[in-house]
Image (cartoon, rainbow, N blue to C red; front, side, top):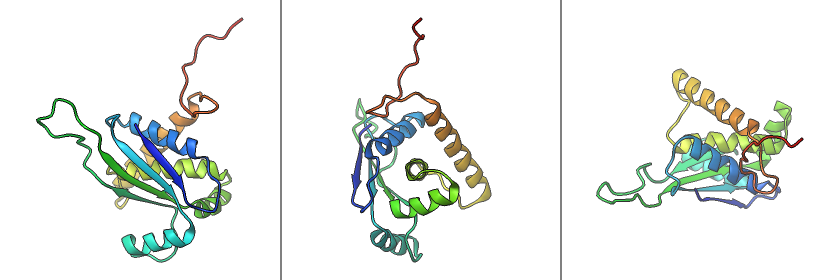
Length: 167
């Protein structure tokens, strides 16, 4: 699953972790492995512009999701589905820092949570109604728990197989 991460904010972020969590969530949700996702980290001014334009609300927000294609990644008469651009997840590290401090964890942890949240929005989940909120936040918590409990390769963030310990 190609996940492209671009950091256009003034704050350094762990782009490989963002790509890895998005790849993990898409795989866990059964999304076609040919589907593509874009993650963009932006500064508060640009996030404010997006927030006002698309949500009608002033000021920066933590995450916005912009779905592109339907999850059907090919025509029904094609033998193999083709790649589809799922959409864009836009994150604001400046807002993530404030939220991380309030929650008592790191900015990287907050960005992983926000990326997961954004991907779920891309996949059609929402939290406008109490039942939707319960479903989405429950799924989000389950995905994050699975992500955190899986052993990771140090450089790629990819899950690694647990094998028997020597000795």
